[in-house]
Image (cartoon, rainbow, N blue to C red; front, side, top):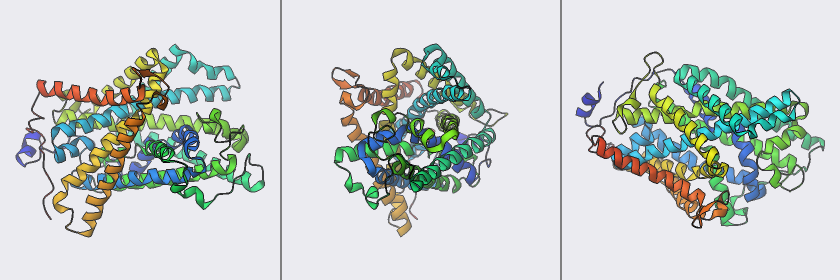
Length: 506
């Protein structure tokens, strides 16, 4: 069905030519878990979160889970009505009009392109660490500090991930089943081994699990609570990749939404299990292996894998490598399909709407995402490594921005149905409204906090923290690009292609 034909029917929604019916519920959940990257995320996030909230880490993980689940329910409802690969872009456009819709799409694209560069960098770090462990040569791990070698290897990783994504969902599924299974087995191994050490009395700082750990009100201050929630929201990010595959799944109206909600639940179980194992084994003190030791917070598994897993510690390095590599590949799915939809609906140059005839994948958009991620990484590493990490810290702003917009789009789009049944009141009004409000509150709270240079690396400009400047700057860059494109090709902004509308009364 062409765009012109569907526009005559009043919405403008149409299929893009992707390979339909290739991903089932299990495949979608596997890709969703891969995109969240539990092994990589945990090793990077456990330490900083413990530094903020101590033994209340499980409580914060649960609190961060709540808005993610609420937003996932809103995504499910929107997808059931409008299964479209543009997700946030398409749904916000239908609910709020082209301008907010374009910015919702930009938020998703900017966040994913930035994190692609970070995932590639982490994969490179653990790649050389793994080689150093395999060859018993610690000097090999230092190769990642050699800037030319680091940049060249990172570009290779991005190119390989782009190649797999270019070949479509069948290739993506095959790679993800292997990499995700491996990292989950290793995480389970780590958790079981840690609990065995605690039971045997050989743990570093054996700490009994307490119900108080799950009490969010036990956190020392609201500032620490907010910082912990901000971190926990980031660690769940990526589950929405299950929705961007909606035109390629079996039963597009139901499978993606179910996969999104199930992915969030699977991830919180993984996080809680590993968090409890880590706290029970190492405690939250600042001793040699303590989770509260600042020297351990950059990579908690690098510190604890040896004491917990013994001679099999190398498996954890391989798991974090496979986690970041798997996420690097699966994360390409979201920006590529959002760019595809924006090109298809003429919100961007039509080249972005191209589909590979052989693989039925968004060919041009996938390569464009890879080029953008590579360029971003090279630029920030050459300018300042602090700029790269501050931009990663600013990701929280963009995540809350586009998740919040999409959740509220659900509320507004289904406003005529909001109170027609108990189900609609819960899933199409209350859940997305609460989730969206929480995330937008977190957006403004994070924006205010990040104005302090101490929020990130300490870098500043005119006394304003670089995390704020980079985060808000990226969002404003999108607004500028949107205004430029609206002058070049105004059809989308005049609603000549994709129209604003609302779900009819039931």
